[in-house]
Image (tube, rainbow, N blue to C red):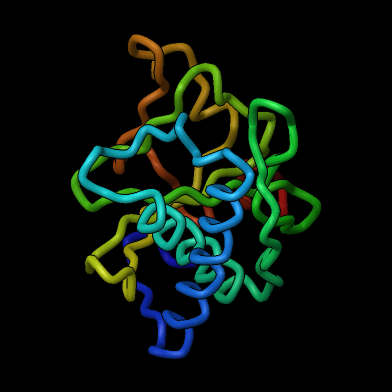
Length: 172
């Protein structure tokens, strides 16, 4: 993954991501769980948030030669059923995505033990392209200086490159 590079999904990949996101959203509605703790602005539907998030997860896994998680069941940080999105070199990775003008924001009560975060910003409304902003470790994100009110904020300039991440984690 190259920091600040824009990555694109093919039409078939967009269709696949839409299908999985639709199935996940239908299951959430059917089981009475609709991701209500999400911090996204009110102008995006829950389905759009699912598409945005899974699109970023899919792109990350594709570029890092990992298998994306296609499961449909509900996962939550609050009950420890949503630990991370991928494993790379033995490290847990949580892939995050947001609209182009928002910093990464994680509510204090959704703090996780995930070791690495990978952050994307969406470029187009139909989620066909994403700009990869970079990596951060758990310690970088959840540093007390990033806590403002009820959330941790992490700005684009705080993310590091893959090379810097490997150095920080002593990966050869």
